Length: 437
Image 1 (tube, rainbow, N blue to C red):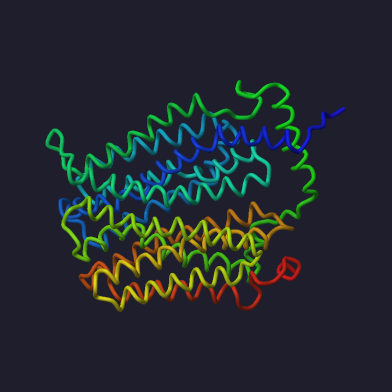
Image 2 (cartoon, rainbow, N blue to C red):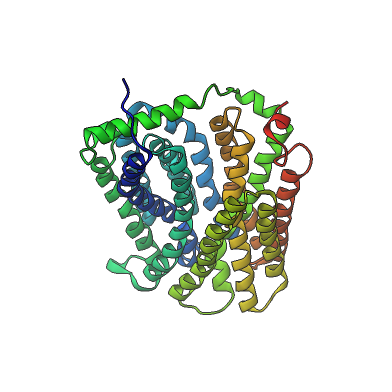
């Protein structure tokens, strides 16, 4: 006979689980994102030292995503085989070592090769974390946990911007260039945390000592019951998704948003520097953090408002519409303060819309193989992380201006096209029963 637990008892146990595992996972994800995008800050000194052109910088920035996408699925399979206790520390240690190796490069080719390998090393980290959390949390807790991961990206930029630029301004130990120390000092935490993770992460609730036997039974039983209550999910092959127009509309829309988003992430430090506020790297870092502070507040407020009202369509239109407006205004303004305001508007708009987009996609696929469909949308859309920065580099190379007007207008168009794809025809505004007939 199965044990029965009150809702209050379950809530107490799951709150205990969240307190014990979420802060460490959040720390890992912050370090992960800092190491993924610190190339943008290193470029403030590195590009001149190594003679890297804007087009080449755009390419080496984005090539990370090719390695990430190609090895995401194999990495997930390996985690299923070896368990989170082994595989997540492996990911952390390997990516930390590769970031440190970036400090020894002497050419763009070496940077490109290591950036590709960094993508290979990090592949599977985010979906691996989601899989790991599913072993510990109820559905009602997962949404909150995932929102923390989205917030971690912005927190990483808020913390990483002044940290990276402080290193660039002040650390040249043993005659090494400051940008080389940036990679060393920001790669080491991943290696250290990878070692710690081996002792902190457990494959299942049964493997920890901070839960009593009764708490373990409650936790495992609740999660098991939830999974069994989902009923039969209609499994779909990859071929199924590629035959559906609505699926192509969704992933192309996400691809265009990722193109615009990662272009700003990698190029923002150089754009801020070009505004002429200061030649000090640390001041550039502090100013670079401003749009992300606004984005964090905007994302939390706008997502909660969407959840509270139950409305998605117009919340996404307003968010990504503001992003498009921000790109246009940045292209029009020459005043540095107005340009900074434009960057705040577009960054906030992009991030405020992403959680709402994924909420709509999840709802769209609720009666079919959501995990497979969502993973496919994410993988195809993430290609934009390579294409976007590379396109920006081409425009910067041809115009000689970091905030190239044609590029900004192009990204504004990308955001508008995304909304058109999502909200016209057989798209996200329709119910699932309509959508997969």
